[in-house]
Image 1 (cartoon, one colour):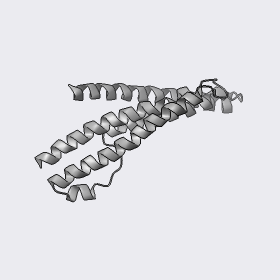
Image 2: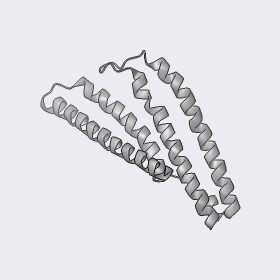
Image 3: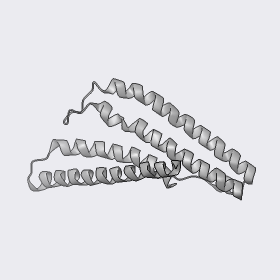
Length: 158
């Protein structure tokens, strides 16, 4: 049941990433056309594509955890026995959870302070741009826990 919910969340995030990438391609394409063909560059396309890239990067990081796309050094983990593998899983998961918990807690204050600042061209509150930080961190934590539980169970069976 939980695995199905996490899979559904990741599926939605995947489609959001695809949509954001599509919108970014359109914005950059428009910028190229208007800059080099029409000779009247659009100011908003550069800013929009920058913010879309930020959201793509952060959401992609959270989604990447679900498919184990992050680089890691597994030499020690592969050489370890069953009990040591479990210790390494718990230790690495705890450290990563602490790191992302700190990001989540501190990002809300940062977002709150940034809501009064607006972007130069689109006039968006910058806090809206930064809301992707806690969103992607929660997504990363959810996927980290699922991957860690899966690795724990696989380590127990070996």
